[in-house]
Image 1: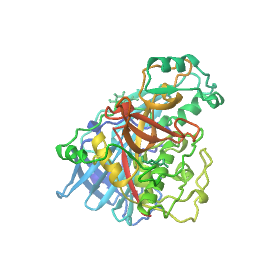
Image 2 (image 1 turned 120 degrees about the vertical axis):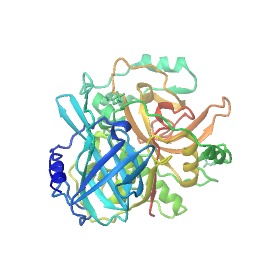
Image 3 (image 1 turned 120 degrees about the horizontal axis):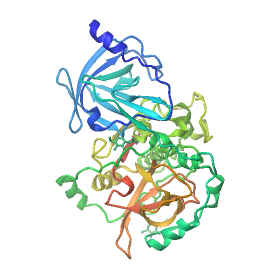
Image 4 (image 1 turned 60 degrees about the vertical axis):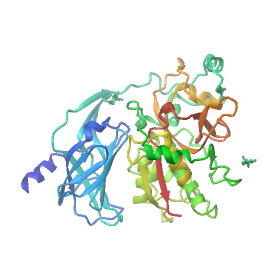
Length: 449
Ligand SMILES: *[C@@H]1O[C@H](CO)[C@@H](O)[C@H](O)[C@H]1NC(C)=O
Ligand SMILES: *[C@@H]1O[C@H](CO)[C@@H](O)[C@H](O)[C@H]1NC(C)=O
């Protein structure tokens, strides 16, 4: 007894909230863990800034591919959330915490065998506790140095040569000039592309396709578009996130909005509030980025989301204004395929048609900013004037199809850069080749209308 209390105390490293997450891989996390919890009597408003006394200890083994087993042999599931941390569900409880990290100057130390203080609760979302985890066998800590852009605050300068190079190199898609870009700094662009907290860790892979999935996939239509299902549109209007790294909040809210429309045959058309996420969510990093699995999924289930009218969008970090507005909740959420790393084109098509819009991630390269129309693929061309970091941008999958003339397969995707961008706020992108990692991390979140 005393031993595990001492072990848990050594976890009590105070870490302040900031914009640079750890970089932990599947292999860093897989293995045997001790989960420590405070008394399981809290509610959704529980404050876990300070962990409090440890009351419960659970041993859990996180195994390949997504199996979690506790010390009594109860089987559950687990998933990585990109490189940020992990969620596991076993014996009626769900646990989430970010992986532990420390930052000195521009050097980040990833301490992947420990977590920050997170939250656990039973699957009925009633009894909450603060939670922390420690791996039984210590894993080596890793460092990486943040690549800072040279002139974060200098204004973006148009590189017309890049536009003409894109347009002369290929004919699948067309690049154009967006004059408003020159009013934005490089940092504004970085935020709009996903934010520093969603920097690309390493090339995500899309998962293998099972025989049964291939069979079911054969019976799907050639094309699909939730904006026009037998003449009916189920997709809420395109919005503009501005210069805040809130794409993950817009994609999450937009996904829930459209699914409410689908679930109620358009009788309910809510618009949810991304500002509530930016200002209030402890599961994301405000205007520095975040991950839809944790927002459309866990936050919307645990805490609930509110309507736009209740908390209008400001486009900047702000202190949370806790309101008394009605909350709307997510009933069920998952990574398509069952866990992070199991996604692929076929599973995405099935989930899209069966349930509705999926929230997907996209690696944003320089050329993508200039997309005006057509079927996008990364040309490999780089913008020497405006050196931006590679980020993950969250967007919404609404459909798929095939170009009539060329036969090129594509996804139709809703962006959050306003209606003037791309094809009326949307873009199309190559399908079937995990273009820019778009087939690697689709999230499905089912709201309760
Ligand atoms: C994160 O870790 C992966 C795997 O070890 C590595 O390939 C990648 O470069 C790392 N990313 C950063 C930003 O250090
Ligand atoms: C919806 O799709 C049908 C069939 O492809 C097409 O005829 C119709 O014009 C479309 N409606 C809208 C509003 O785009």
